[in-house]
Image 1 (tube, rainbow, N blue to C red):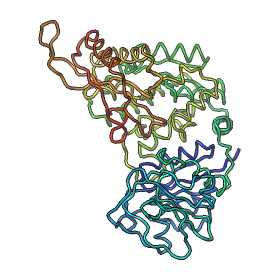
Image 2 (image 1 turned 30 degrees about the horizontal axis):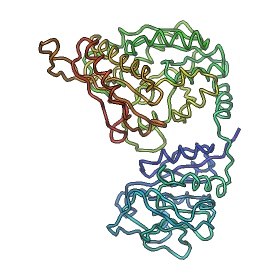
Image 3 (image 1 turned 120 degrees about the vertical axis):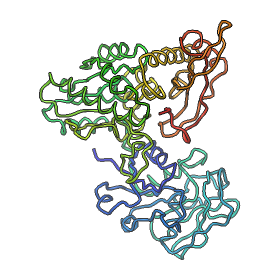
Image 4 (image 1 turned 90 degrees about the vertical axis):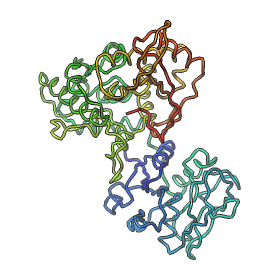
Length: 513
């Protein structure tokens, strides 16, 4: 089924992915493209409309991102946000200035509610501003359709074309009626139909998988997490017994994880799963490796080698299926965004070897985490699988800062289990997006039983999030933290101090490595 779609053009905004999420929440497919998108790319993607993101630059900066002429010439409806608005006005001969009175945070805006993009809005509402530059002059082809309370131009529209620009950020929740504005652009201006649902995604994916695989067999990399479980279930739904799940126990799993995975997925969902014990191989490769990027790349390659070894007994294997998600691609610098900064190489993206013997199938590659959970629910996966906190493919290797040894793995497994068990006991687990313990390569002095100790430091981390792209640290009740700290120090040999991480994303990442 062909779905209507929106092209998001990225100019470096911290909110670009959020724009995509808001469009998808309204059941319209959206995808991010680089600022220098070409006419061929536009025609191939065939969007109903285009949204230009914000960005940190001034339009007059030497290396500022420019507005592709192919975008203007597409004759599609366009919505420019913040820097996107400034680019539009600059392109049409207007002037952008910095008046040393930037707007940052909440602002009151007065709307021309007779204009279609602001229809069904209040005459005035609170919006989220984040700009230093502003529109000063504009040519006769444009008209002002909104102003802020301090008389700054908040929105303009081209008088003869379906081109709009807003200085504020409708994608941010602090813009009270922002979703209405995006909805108006999607449905009233771009004429989109809201057909992109989890059910339709499953149907489309099954058709694509069947066509791609044909009569070949597929090996599915299964970790037991939400992403790989949904991927494996989707593959099984599409091709049945031609899907062979390989679960690699690399020795870096949470305590009792291997047993739980085999019980819930193999026995509970009747997936075709083979378990491979590869602890020795992984730990040997990781010996004395402390750099997180090297860890991820080593683990990514060793996963592939383990898959290759496991499939020697299988015939006609041409494909490897992975639970790669959109945030994995973005953070690994592997999206369509051109020279994107690599935050960290996810083992299943940046860590793959060049001599990969399989063709990749990544049916969830365009989805955010919450969308994956919706797909899993539609596929009938039980809540205890869908509700599991995310767990990185490299496992505890990126939660053990510094060198990895069996002793340090054991310490972290025990501490992490106490943390998670306590969260469940106090009914906090389901309030949290992701919670885990981190073993820090720092020892501290302590006193236990009237004796001096010099032992390891453990950090606890818990965050809330919607899609993993941004996250806030969880305001953990102090009594829960107290129980966790006391239990870890008293029950885990080798730990004498526990701290709690209160860093959000950004500036931090969710994981420590």
